[in-house]
Amino acid sequence: MTQTTGRIFDEMARLMNDAAGVAQGVRREFDTLFRTQAERILRDLDVVQREEFEAAKEMARLAREENESLKARIDALEARLAEKTAKKPKNDE
Image (cartoon, rainbow, N blue to C red; front, side):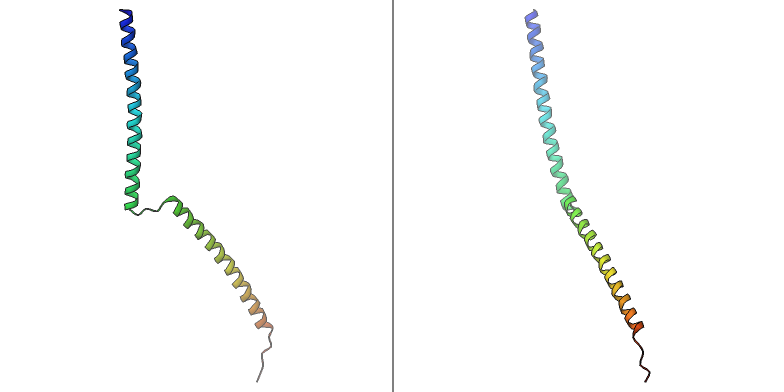
């Protein structure tokens, strides 16, 4: 009887082990299916991907820096022009 009880426990342990393996497989399948569906829905909604957003954000930062640099150059040129205009004597005719 002891041998039969041990054998039953061995079979139950193997069954539980197999069930755990099947459960992991089902979970992986569910995760894959869920991810695929989510990606399809996001594509249909035309939601921007993270990489594209980061690239656009970097382009905007560079453009902002260039604009600030160009504004500083324009301000300096306008100041020089105003200085030259102020120094230039007016002809009284």
